[in-house]
Length: 127
Image: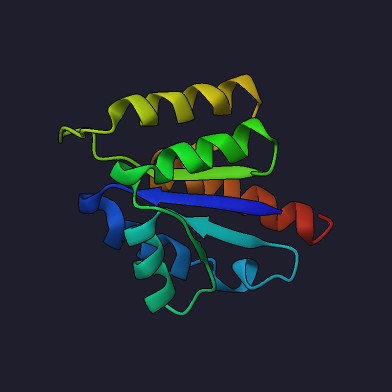
């Protein structure tokens, strides 16, 4: 199972903090993490193995969207900063649309991500 991780600049620390709460789950052998470039570097420094893609503005969001279209992604966690402008917003909108088209769970904030990851924990542990 591949989980894609993206965080706008103001949300990268939130992403690392969130993932730290699910370290045991994310070290499960069947889970692979991928992330846009800078987000991936932050995640890697926190002790996680992660496949780093391009940074978001350079096409990382589009790379994840392409993986979503190919059904290579099981979950997308994208901590967005709704109070800031982003030059790659068309790529962001394409990713969100493809998650909806292909029925891929998408969390855009920690509360939703927490619900998805807790459900994933239950599923993996057979409860």
